[in-house]
Amino acid sequence: MISHHTLGNTTVLAKSKEKRDIEVLERVQRRATKLVKGLEHKSDEEQLRELGLFSLEKRRLRETYRSLQLPERRVVSHWKRLPREVVESPSLEVFKGRLDEVLRDMV
Image (cartoon, rainbow, N blue to C red; front, side, top):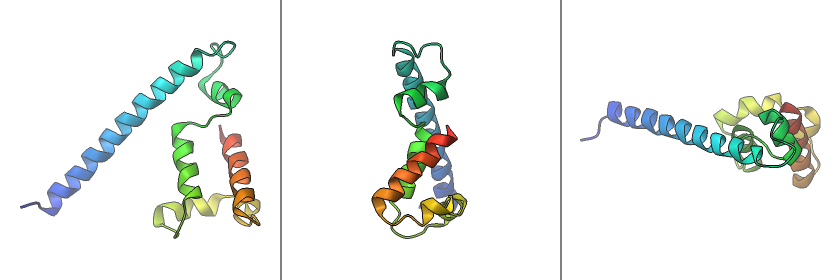
């Protein structure tokens, strides 16, 4: 029989594994960006900006915002922090562009 306690531990283990996976992917991303000529001596953030990329964390956040169907508790706090011009975008395409600008400025 699976108890609530067991399920809770499984969730913790899954989150721990996910965090390790993210760390591994970020290391690979950093190593790969250092291979690009002219970027090898720049900071990780500068390399990503030069390449027009976001960190994995920001990409996950970006996809969360973009895939909103129904407001979820974990998203509401992020949504409330978005600038008014992003939230009140007249179309999905404008929203995506404005969101990318805000996230790019966060790098």
